[in-house]
Structure formats: C-alpha cells, structure tokens
Length: 364
Picture (cartoon, rainbow, N blue to C red):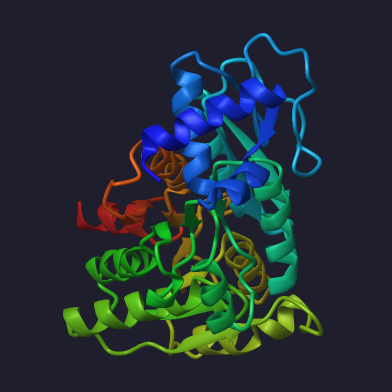
C-alpha cells in the first residue's frame, strides 16, 4: 500500500470512528505500527487530524482519546514526538545522561517518558513493551550493565517495533538497526596513561570495578597506550563493590601493598568514589598522594571534592544524552537517514592528585 493510500485510509477511519488506535488500524491495514505512526505524524502536521498517545482523533471530535495501554500521563500541547528512556536503577552516572536527554528534548519540543528497568532481560522487555503500547515514537536504551545473556539481549534489540538508540552501551552486529551513542572509554583511559607518562611515569597501574560495563574498554585503552608509548606494562587490579565484597581496606589491600613497595607509583582508578577511598586508606598508612602515588580518576563526578583534588578523565555524559535524543529525532524526521554509531571523547581535567603542579614548580 502506497503512502498516499495509507493516509487516505487513516483519514477515512478517523472520520468514520471519531478516533483510532495505531495498533488496531495497523493490524486491520496489514502495515507496521511504525509506518502508521509516521503517517499519523504527517497528517497531524498538515492539520488534518489530532495526534494523541496511541493513535489519532478527528479535529472536531468529542470522542475520548484512544489508548492501547495506560498512557504515561498527558502529552503537553505542541509535542512533536514522545521518546521513551529506559535506565537502570540508581547511580549518579545515569543522572547526568538523563539531564542531557532532558535538556535536548526540551529544546526540540520532545516529550521524554522515563522507565526504570531491572537487571533481567524480561524486566527490560516489559518496560519497553509498556512504553511502546503507550504510544512512544522512539526508544533510548541505557540497559542495566549486568544484563545477561548478551546474545539474547541483542537478538531482542533487533526486533524492536520502534526506532531505538543504545545509550552509553555498545552492541554487536546482531542488534540490527539499533543506533548507538557512547563515550569513548578506551580513548579516555589512554588519555590518562599519556598524561601520567608525560609526568615521567614509565609504568601505570589500572584499578577498576569488576561490575562496571566500562572496565573492559578502560583495560583496552590502558593496554594500547602502554604499548604505543613503549611503557612498562603496569598491573591491573579488579575490585568488587557488590554482594559479599570485603570492606574498603581489604578490597584495596593489594593495591596499597603495591604502592608501599614502590611497584606502583602511578595509577588510573575507576571511579571517583573508589579513588577517594583509596586516597584515604593510603593517607592513614602514611602514604601520600601525589608524592608516593600519582593518581588519575575516571569519572569526574565528585573528584574535585577529595581532600587532595583528583585529576580526572571526564566522560561527556550530558553530551551523550543530547546526541542520543538528537539521533532519535533525526530518525523520526527522516527514516532514510543513514544509521549512526557515535563515540564522544572524554576530556582530562588536571588537578593536584597527579603531581602536575608539583612537577611544574620543580621544572621552574
């Protein structure tokens, strides 16, 4: 069925019934709900019908708005698109990305509907099902870092009914037409290694959380920078902060011993909270930062609040959110737009913990 034929059929159905749901009419016409939503948007833009969550109604109709499922609240007047944003529970990292989405959506006249998912694939699937049933046009997915199995998750992502953007996560080719926006964490780790090497350190350790989805990328960036610069490979310390994890002193014991023995004089630590905890443990045992350990943290949410302000690699979290929203709007406005996978580079913010200021005074 051609686009003009579909749109004429929509207008006839709206005129006949007063209101329609996209889901029901799509099934009746034998077309996809995604295609029909685009048609409804076009017709609403031409002033031929009123677009509502889940469908459309006639301009002069007093009929109640159709719903395919409980809609997530009333749509504001003048809304162009409604975008669903799925995020994991907790964590200040996500708040910054959400803020970036929210600011970009406000500037573009887009409504964002937030859903919080759990760790399991079924919980993510249910949240997405509810959002799509409620009439959203596109999805922004910041999936739980513990989501397993990945093969099944990617297969599910390839079957989504509406355009989707994966946010601060990376997926393989099995994810189909999924678009992606993320921080280039490997580049960020390399940025820290290069900075510490420039301060005279020929070996840089990596301290990172096992649970973080970014740890594998940080490890790759760390190793690549060490190899490219001809440095001595530094140790990697993987720590756990969930479940039956030991108290902080015990978690960092191996790291502390390496610093006290002189094996480690420079380190990249992921994240700020762990870096601040490590600085406190070292200080309690008479070891100083940056004199005995030059430290760069990966995060920069609270790094500046440490007793010794921490030099930090800062992922562009708000920019990631803004780019994700922008990709969603581009796809909805022009479905023929080439698929995009965007990596945004973090930046280094130099403070006291790496010893750069002390080095500058010495060189002077």
